[in-house]
Length: 469
Image (cartoon, rainbow, N blue to C red; front, side):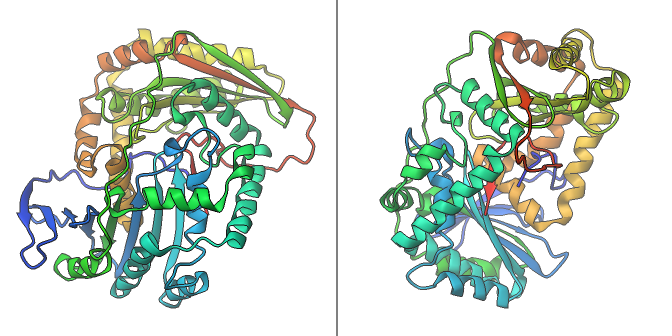
């Protein structure tokens, strides 16, 4: 699932929190807002963080368990382990078989799935509000009691290998993105793909998965989010009953090797079967833990938000050299990421001309102050997307979680004010600082005559790469 950053969700109401204690459940402490908003945080005695948001628009809830483990936590030779473990979590536990798990959810009108990214692995169940205890029980059980059978592991490994073959090996743009990341990151584990390298996947063992599970699938390395139609007073005892008995284990360290500052432009050329020549450019940039991250959000909107954006107006409509062109940036990555620009060249045009035209738009950002009319338009687009998405309890939980992964869920409150603080001078400064040749990796995809290339009409670039079952 491709997560379009956090230009979505929540209101512009400012939340003021008071630290309090839940007297009837001494193992829980939480921070609660005093003005009536229902979002608050609780911490169980075993270290599990609980984030709750009441939304009474419909009698449904989303229950999500997020583990602070993704491909960035893997090691050389063991890539793909996070995603493969996600698959194994649906193969049953000591209490519930895989069939029982699915039946209990579906018989009660629910749906469940999971996804893995560089920074996290998350599991969710969407279900009617009165049945909320069911996913709580199931998720708490497999947090501690998942089973790892050799035959089931071998089956799931084959599934993941085939998934890689279909989604990466047979997808030219996905393959180009993978090679771009591997070139842009030489030390940091964003170097490898979420799904893992094929050779590593083939060598993974059930023992690898079991060790990984015991290390990372512990309460202190996870958080539970519930959003929907519930009462906090009624729900907290159910959460305590389901998860409170799990043993307390120290969370593993999240420190990884830092990527050195890039000292010069890097270029790659990929030649393989395909249909359309493509270009990608990736600049090293900060995330939301740096105020410049919000400026980059606005820059992304200026370049590629809709048909009034600069890329569409100049590259697609006016110059007619690009079939499509867009920018993509993950504000909520755990570590500093890449600001991506991706484009496909129009028939009978060439990649060099397309790259030159993109460079002209970057130089324009660095030399010409953005007009207030254009800037306000983009800010309004970002704010509108932020507000309109409040109707989905699932997406509300997602944005809470992604902010929590990157820093803290309370950063949600900063989003709209930070966007509105961006000035034309901020855009000039940030573009000059980060969007320079010395700080970028450029990738060309040059197609060879196609051989069984799978059609893919969707947007192929996944900057915050995420794999769903």
